[in-house]
Amino acid sequence: MKLNSGHLTFCTNIYAGESWEAHFAVLKDSFPKLKGQLSPDAPMGIGLRLSNLASIELLEENHLTIFKQWLEDEGGYVFTMNGFPYGGFHHTRVKDQVHAPDWTTDDRVNYTLRLANILSQLLPDGMDGGISTSPLSYKPWFTNAEARENATITATTNILKVAEGLHQIQEQSGKVIHIDIEPEPDGFLESGPEFIDWYEDVLLPSGNDEALIKNHIRLCYDVCHFAIGYEPHTSIIKELQEKGIQIGKIQISAALKAKLPASSPERTTVLDQLSRFDEPTYLHQVIARKNDGTLLRYPDLADALAEGEDPAVEEWRAHFHVPIFVEDMGLIQSTQSDITEVLNLQKHHPFTNHLEVETYTWEVLPAALKAPLNDSIIRELAWVKTLLEQ
Image 1: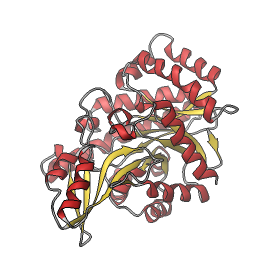
Image 2 (image 1 turned 60 degrees about the vertical axis):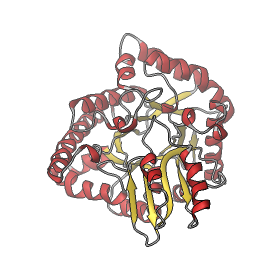
Image 3 (image 1 turned 30 degrees about the vertical axis):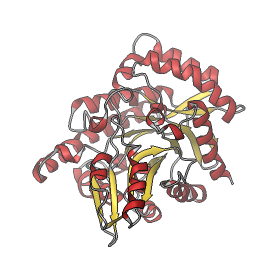
């Protein structure tokens, strides 16, 4: 839905079903109900997530024509896509494979260009489109600095190939589409400083046209991911603006947060609450802050729990997308206040047109946080809309 501060939607990676037929069936069932509650009198946007399989199937036969007609009939439009998860994302063990295939591969290039082709045909006139994507690759896959440097060069070269393809789309259709790199813990780019360093030290010096790069390669600001790293949102966004690096999309998401009491019995109780989020589908990286302000990084929640009694650690933040409308969950909390900070910046001085709520963990949440899916989506979007319009 169009607000004064941008187009607000939700990401359809919340839905299971990797084929186009399965994904479209869920959309046809849910979207009219959501729109009826949230935007009954005006068009409502969709943040479309397509697996590689679904992206291939959508371009077969007349599926895309049918989808475009359905969007018109239902008052829907697509302006942003999630091109991060390539394969299965529900009912399977995803973990680090969410990064596969990474940006060192032709598969990632071809998939992203296919999404751009689809988006160019769905994107309304006069609106820019974005595709969020992996932060190049996953650090633990590369055991030494030389291997990581070579992978960074290959990944950057491939991203530039896609940027050239997006430039061609713009030349042919007049539509601006950008890929939005999404830093996350343990990705090659996992923080604001790492993204900016890569952009200025690797991407821009590549010899390609700077204006083309800045038009088609942007940042996806996933609030959850930046909050996990205790990053200063206001100063990062200001630095990006000063350097002329655009933010293509805000992904509105909340992480787990917990203060760890010094006394062992109380600490154990908090750790027990956190252990309920240790599930086998997704990566739940943890960044712990010690009493002296230094940070410890754990690749998954189970690894952090194994060292949970470390008395030098005072706070955890975990990569588990929890409902954005809940801040206090008893002994543990969410990083909802980080969302408030970022959206207040966007409200007063908009820096992107794309706002996407991305809580994809409804199926694996502890029972106490679960609710009917449509009700949860409506509640999340209404919470954001209220915050932006108050």
